Amino acid sequence: MIYVMAQLPYNFTYDDMAFNCLMRSVWAASVGWIIIACAHGYGGPINWFLSLPMWKLPSRISYAVYLIHVQVEVLHTVGVVKPRYFTEIDTLYSCASYVTISMILGFCICILVDAPTSTLLKILFGYGYGIRHLQMICMGLNMITLFIGRGSMGVAVLAMTDISRRRDARVEIYDWDKKTQGIILSSFFWGYMLMQVPAGLLSKRFGGKLVIFVALLVNGFVCGLLPSIVKIGGWQIVCACRSLMGLSQACLFPASHTLLGKWLPSHERTSYTGLVYGGCQLGIVIAMPVSGLLAATTLGWKLIFYAISAIMFLNAFIWYYFAASSPGQHKLISPEEREYIERDLNVSQPANFRTPWLKILGTRGFWGALAGHIGSSVVYILFFVDMPTYLEKGLNISLTSSATLSALPYIGMVVGNVISSLLCERLYNKGVFRLVTLRRIFNSIGVAGVTVGLLALSFAKSDSKALAVGMLTVTLSLCGFVSAGFMMSLLDLSPNYSGVMLSITNCITSMGAVLTPITTSFILRNDPTDVSRWRIVFFVTAVIGVISNTLYVLLVSADRQVWDDPDYMDKRKADPEERKPALSKEHTVELKQLDR
Image 1 (cartoon, rainbow, N blue to C red):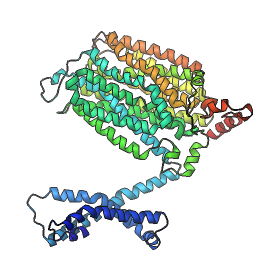
Image 2 (tube, one colour):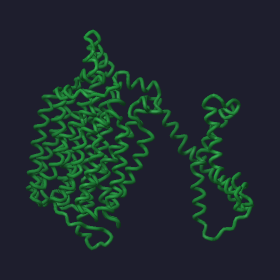
Image 3 (spheres, rainbow, N blue to C red):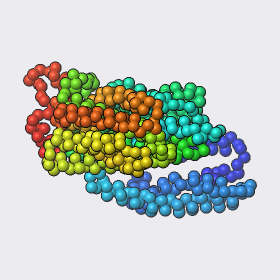
Image 4 (cartoon, rainbow, N blue to C red):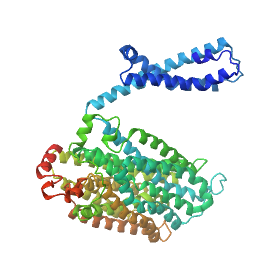
């Protein structure tokens, strides 16, 4: 209102221009000065007056009005169909109507959105929920978003080579055979493999928040540019883009493991880790059917990459403002919750960052976790990369149906992931089994389910489509049980260095990820319609899974290692009288009793 009245009459004078340029800045500076003064105890009577209870509701309504008033003005303006001539009285009426409508809508927002949300947060936080749960939600979103970027390529490459749309001038179709498609699908893991160990070290040194934020931005830019540059460089430029995505996404699991080790006390670690990593399968569940639907639109496969780019940037915004690398760095966490998280974790960061490489490589449990990771990775990559091709070419299911049905097994994997994590933690906290026994049991259940499922799937016939998809769903549902197995073993050994160790195992298993699509195309002899050849692929994968689980069961350990102390390297060089173990026997027993 003040702004409108001050503009009358408006004669384009220097006074008017100066007023327009400085009005908002001066107003913002004045309000900001009042806020700062009140926050630092210099507000005096102004602070007392603004702190009165009567301003609580008006302050909420005024903020809602601030959020909605621009939309009210825009909706009114775009609806004008005739030229409008402003008079003083007309301007005042318009301003009054905008204010009235905005206040009504602001009140509705307070009643329908703000009040229920505030009440829900009070209920949740009052029963043990806190900022660490917000952190877990953000980490789960990262998993979903980045795996959407990964999982969409299996459908996108089919759409990019869909000969049925060759006559459509709006969509470019490329003549890439099965071997070329296998190279494109495996190119993601070229960069993913090379960057694993550096990503783990970067996550440990600079914190998981920064490296994941950079990964989200890089993936957003790459996906946004790929549709424009593929016509220039062909499949080679697609491989280059996918390799760059792999380089940036190499930090995802090491950084997430590092964050989980800093944010979760041991008695909550299994369940919330399973929920966070369940975002991997959920991302694929979303990516495959949605990518199939987007590929069928007028823009075709290009829309897949544009949509992913937008999601990446949105997730980067959420991650930047609502997450932190450690409880001590989060601005919203309470001292009580921070103490609750850190009381049984030694999370101090030494001034001279050093990683106990020899101790890590000399730990038996590390090699057991590596064996379990190798078997799970081969199975996962087979389904992740080649399932759309198998359903479309081997079982003659259309691209859109293939994308939808491909997602069903991953829905089952999400369910298996969540159930196994919650069940494992409950059994451990109640003292039913030792932690190492639970790791062996759940990992073996996952591998046994995959083995039986793959052997059964290898004898599926092309006319038994529903049965084949059902077997795939059951197989990956049981595969989700490994989330309570080898995925937790590195966190059991060392919460502080779990990200670094995971980067090593990921680097090794990524070699198999690169070779799996290429080996599959070699076995299929560039003929994905041959179901008998798919039988060989499934049988070989099942054998690898059994061998890896056997080694895992023999080597796995769930004992927290002495070298997990960040100051372990310095303490080794200290005088013998000054040395103290990072975890004494009494402290270990105390932690186990606390966990239960």
